[in-house]
Every structure is written in structure tokens, then in C-alpha cells.
Image 1 (cartoon, rainbow, N blue to C red):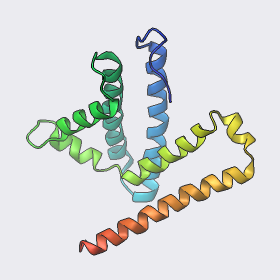
Image 2: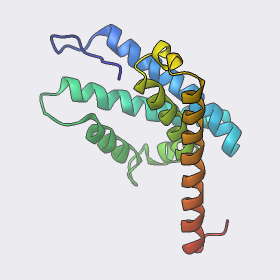
Image 3: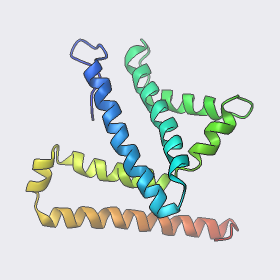
Length: 162
């Protein structure tokens, strides 16, 4: 994981830049996957993923800056809920654009990132050899198809037309 603090516990410009770079790369790949896989317009997807990225940055910053010992996940969740809560002035805007981002397009990119991160670096990942790359791709594809099958079954059981 990219750190945004130095050894003294202070937020660093370099650390924030790393987080922004990581979220930008993640966002671009997610938007492309969202467009190819789900046919959502790229502009709507870019706005939606931008909103999610800003919420993420705010949550990570709050975890590091506020004196409370609370995980960034909680901050991110509360910010997201507050922005999309019915009756809030931001509700319609946030809900519309974030709904244009499919969960599976985010999860696919996240799983790829985690798979690479497990190797600690690209060089270590490449050193694992072609069999590891094939296994990684099979695991990601199996996860995707397994999730799609479970989602289809649940949708059929709940009466949603598919």
C-alpha cells in the first residue's frame, strides 16, 4: 500500500502525490473496463470514479490527520453516505454518477492490483514465471465468472428480469 505519511506521522506531499497517482491509474483502468464491459458513457464514469476517488482521498487523509484511532474505511463510508443521503443537496448528483460505476469493474482492477502487490514489485512478479501469470489470470477470471453466476442466481430468485 502506498503510504502518505513519513516516519514522523506527518502527511507528506510526496505521499499524497503517490495516492493521487495510484487512484488516477486505478480510475482510468476502471473507467475503460466500465465502458467496455457495461457500456456506460466514459464521461459519466469519469465523473463517478472522480467522486469515489475524492471521497477515498478525504477518508485516508482524515485517518492520518484526525487524532481519533479510526480506520479510513469508516471515514470513507460516512463521507459517501453523507453525500448520497436523500435530502442532501449533493444526493442526486452523487447517486447518479456513482451509479454509473459497476462494482465488478472496480473489483477486477482491485484484484489485479492485489495480485501484483503480493509479489511486492513488478520484478518479483515477473520472476514468478509464466505459470504464475496464467494462474493469476485464471483466478481473476474465475472470481469474475463466479460472482456473475451468483449475481444471476440471486437476481432470478428475487424476480428481477435478466
